Image (cartoon, rainbow, N blue to C red; front, side, top):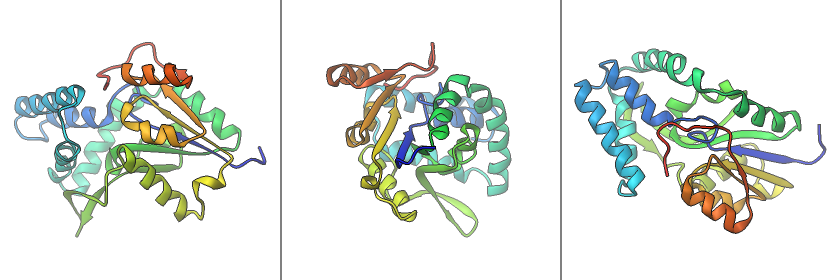
Amino acid sequence: MTNKRRLALFDLDHTLLPLDSDYQWAQYLALNGHAGDPEQALRRNDELMDRYNAGTLSAEESYGFMLGLLTLGTVEQLEHWRSDYIKQIIQPAVTPQALELVNNHANNGDLCAIVTATNNFVTKPIAPLFNIKHLVATEAELKEGKYTGNMVGKPCYQEGKILHLNNWLAGMGFKPSDFEEIWFYSDSINDLPLLEAVSHPVATNPSPSLRKIAQERSWKTLDLFSELADHKS
C-alpha cells in the first residue's frame, strides 16, 4: 500500500473492452427479437454507429436511441436479457491484459473507477468483471419501477465526464485536488476534456485522432489489444 492518495480512472468501451458495450447491447436485443423487427433494428443500430464514426450523430439522438431500448421490457425482463448478454458477449471479451492493468493500480492502493458514457443499466454488471467497485456513468431514469427512456441530469460524455466525476468524488468527501496523482485511460477523442484534466493521461487503444494528439503532447500510449472490433474513432 502507498501513503499517497491516487486515483485511476478507466473509460470502458474500446479501452478496457475491445468492443462497444452500447452497440453490442442493441445488437443482442435485435438478434434475439427483443427490439421489434430484427432486420430493421439491426439496420438502425448500424446506421447510428456509422453516423457516430462519421461525426454526424448528436449526443441527444444517440442517447435517445440507447436509453429507448430500456423501454422495451419490464425491469425484470431487461435484467434477464442483460444477464444473458453479459454471459454471451461481455465476459468472453474481458482480457488478461485489461485485468492486469486494473489490478496493478488496485495493488498499489489506488482508488479505481470506470468513467463511461454508456448508461448505468448496461454497465453496472460490467464493472465487477474488472474487480472495480466504482462506476461513474450516464444514469438511466427509472420512475415507478419502469425505465422512461430518458436520463437523469447530463450525460457522462465529453465535458460531462468531469461533472460526473466531481459529483462522485464529492459524494465520498473528496475533490480532485485531494489526489496527488490521477490516471485516466481512454481510447476516444471525446474524452479529451478529462484527459487534459488529469496528471497522467494515457491514450489506450487510441483512435487515430487521439493517437495523433498523444504523440504531439508526448502522452503515454498503451495498446492492450492486437485487434479491436467495431472501433469508434
